[in-house]
Image (cartoon, rainbow, N blue to C red):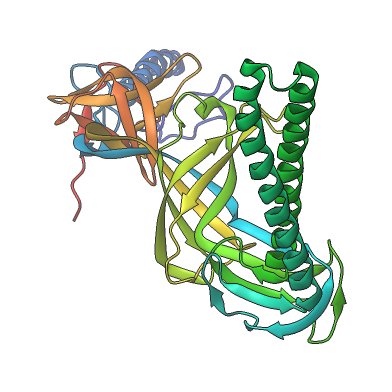
Length: 390
């Protein structure tokens, strides 16, 4: 803007060259110049103010906003649960003695595999074998007596019909036969019991697995209930974990899971859900879930922590955009879709987040171009200038 020149209200005396005009004419000339100088300054001021500023649209609209864009695409979206669980042996017991006796043989080593029914140790069984022999003889004697009385009953039945014996004698014979039958049952039960005790002197594995810690040595005297071995079945394993209650409708027995453990980061172990707790924990609002995991080579161990991933849903035609495209508002989430040289604000419904991307359930179609940077000051219908990478 050019400087504005003004004339002081009380100018200092001006020295001029001698003028032929009279003093009064000189005064009137000076007064005549003042309006001209003031008008000239005003003209310069108006000229400086009427110039156009930097930028701006000649039509008066805002300039296009620079933005970066991306194209909405279709992709596979997995809805899944991730949890931290604990591995447990499906079967883990402490084998206890069921008979009294001295340990005379230990047939397995700690850490060795054993099949179901495999012999773990033997107790001294000479007394038990003798007791079994006595019980067997008593059972044979009882059976013999019962069979003899049964034949007598049949012979005397015909004699009774002929009147050769009294009804009372026949009733006494029948009662003796019934007592003999009871003695047979008693003797056979005693024989089974002694045979059970004899069998208990040989301690066998109740299931196949791996022998754990051994608590007895050769020569030890054990009684019923004493600990002998630990036995663990590590194949299959069970992983126990908790899921939030909001997933109750999506988790059911048979659902597939993937399990990883920290010491085997490259290994993925497949399994399936076998148990879903019928109750929700009121403190954590979670539900306990168990999944069975195959462990044929024994790499998984009971007590390990495990990272569990459970796939709930797989969609192969989901619409996906970078999460940076989503503008979160008070009332809704939205994206700005580029149409020509301007944008349209489009409310959207968000789905699953996958790293830097997010699924759009409603409000967007594959192929739409959305603003991913520079949308903070955009509004519906605003002009934009798409920036391309250099």
